[in-house]
Length: 135
Image (tube, rainbow, N blue to C red; front, side):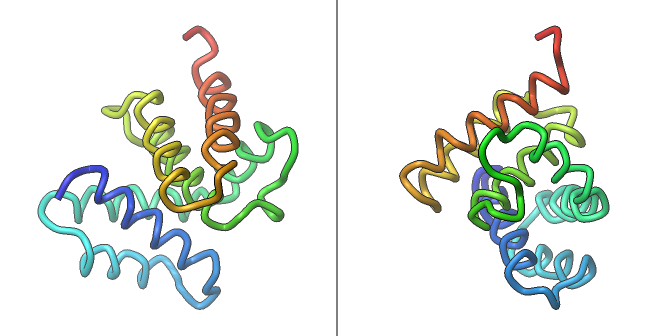
């Protein structure tokens, strides 16, 4: 299993959490164990736990960086993709922001609307600039 495949599964779990209000952190982490393999299980559970526990902060960063839409009005797939990418940017020191942004753009192209990749790129680019203003 590649990191890209693991990202797809994490994005799908975040999406399931967004559309199904009955899923909690424990259920989400158990789904990771069912869907991921190898060293991706622990890493995925750790990242997902951090995203869930800091969802309000992550959403605030997305809201501050979006000029047109707030998280409450965004397509749920796009929001799930961006939450994952912001989580990676904040909590995975071994993944450069540019990689997280690029992977998110690719997920947007694959799983969302024709306009999503550009929207995701704009929002995440702004988040990255706020996180690392000197880069």
